[in-house]
Amino acid sequence: MSGRPRRHLTASRGWLNDPHGITFHDGRYHAFYQANPLGTTWDRAIHWGHATSTDLQTWHDEGVALAPATDEVGCWTGCLVDDGDPVIYYTSVTDPDLNLGAIREARPLDASWSTWAAGERVVAAPVHEDLRVFRDPAVRRTPDGWRMIVGAGYRDGRPAVLSFGSTDRRSWHYEGPLLMGAPDGSPDQPWLGAAWECPQVLRVDGADVLLVGTWADEQTYEICAAVGTLDGHELRDVRWSELTKGEGHYAPTVFTDREGHPTIMFWIRGWAVPWTAGWGR
Image (cartoon, rainbow, N blue to C red; front, side):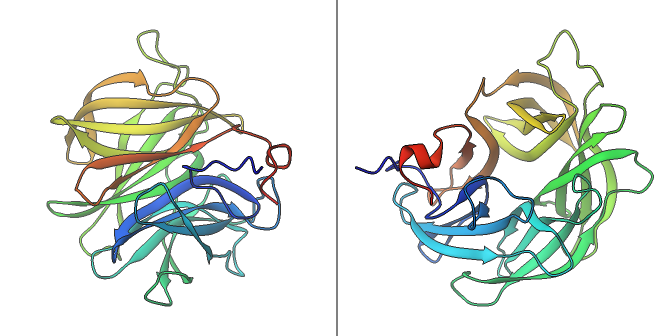
């Protein structure tokens, strides 16, 4: 009997991590995720896997949607925006520093979204910021256009989420930090790491919520939530709490379900060693 989970999205073969770009389109949910179709461990030449579902429980594997282009090492975590012109924004990584990515576009080559092609790099790490980490874009519409947030970490140990604005989703300008943490944390808040990954913003019960994955020294830790008020490109009056604890949930991605409800999906770390569980190869 297979040890494969029945009600969770799993890769048909190989490694899976961060989910992203989950969108209800043409009567189905399209879920994308970080995938290594050639091995059962993470690899820096990561791809975008693709699966579809009508109920978020039973998934159909759609294969690899996006593979690394010839001028990049891997196509890492990002998002999908569909306003009639579907675009993936993803973290394009290159040598020598994989932690400092650039944000690149990809567009579908078919109506089923089964194959995407990389396009232009549209956002780079701000040169005047002394960053050690820059990755994981999330894009949302605002009253005056569009806003992209990107996870970041400074070389002095401060975690941050940086904000970029656009009126047309083609030309982006740096606005500054959405939120920044202290280098060594604070006694009145959870430990927040040295960089923030997979930032997501959603609105719940009249409050604005920023979700971040805490990261330090190449290790992933908890998901933390900052509840506050968005004022332009900044999140103010913040109260922090831990959303997760210990091994398990990481890399949250926010989407709207078919009924219009804000929904979060996570990658579950350490659930099972695939070859021991009897699936994954």
